[in-house]
Picture 1: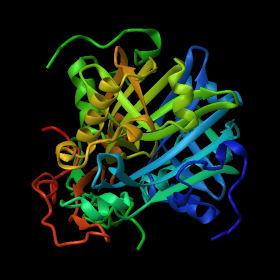
Picture 2: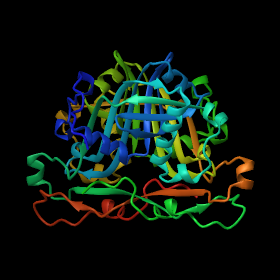
Picture 3: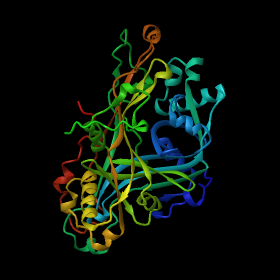
Picture 4: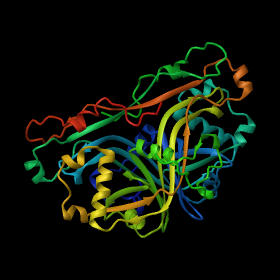
Length: 227
Length: 227
């Protein structure tokens, strides 16, 4: 765990809700490691686009991938500015006033210029990082990519130098008058995620046991809030 | 349920993974109604930004809100193009090859020019829609917004005319050779969401029963995949 601080450029310095802001690089890593999907934004000729996609993290590099035919990845690969958000919704907060209704969450927002990963060795490494983030144990279990599959896959690297992290936990931040006077309930409802039961592919040719790297996930929490 | 087709502008017509594309407006509504957080992208002078935020839908209008001090909302309110994504991750797909590892998901991506909601009656309506989407039953239970709170809240309306929807379900789309030859397992692991136990606010002054609109959510699935 590194404690190198997050960047303090103007656009990545939280101005609002600063009580929720986190400033350690370890906080950024924790949010990115807990999430499974990121939202990658970039500017196309006719306006902004945002693309949901899986990702993986290696140190202070985030990798995303996709088909070489995807317009968003082609645009991102040309060295344009991108913004990447990873968001985990952890619950709903019920205030005494609707104004203080809120949600608990973990949020990381990264600003960077994406670069295309072009050499095969780094691309293969990035894909391993991606696959192992979403489906740990799969890289060594499944068939590795062929040269053709590798060529059909575009990988972008996003530097994590400039990022902001916010985390909200707990109950509502109600007004003193409401805390004193509101006769009703206030609190929060956590949102919890679990892996369900593994399902065999319909086209499995023979009865095959679910391998440990999948079976060990069943019924386990997904992206739990650290205690 | 309306069956008006989704738009067919070039940028909102899926070119890739067209077997996953859905074209009915009801499919768009279903994804938006199942999600709780959207990612709003817009272009700032120094590049794209993406902001996670809650939302609500009324017919073919999506509402997002935030503090009037938030730079992103100020920018969005000036009539600039935005892109809004709502993504639900429904599971991990384990392919026989890492190339066909994938995820199951529901995705809606909307392109629009956001407009600021300025008149108080519409703003109040939009906030009700927002609150009731995230925390149904809260609008009539909690204290309504004061004029000052209303003034401190910026609301953007996003027209849902131009949108694309993709849904992936099921197992891996493996290569025929892998289906025939790979000796191991392939399949999928669903990601399931549930509401946990309600937690009283720390500053609750008296013992108050959790109201029905919250209690009825406890242990219920969140955003389940329709059967």
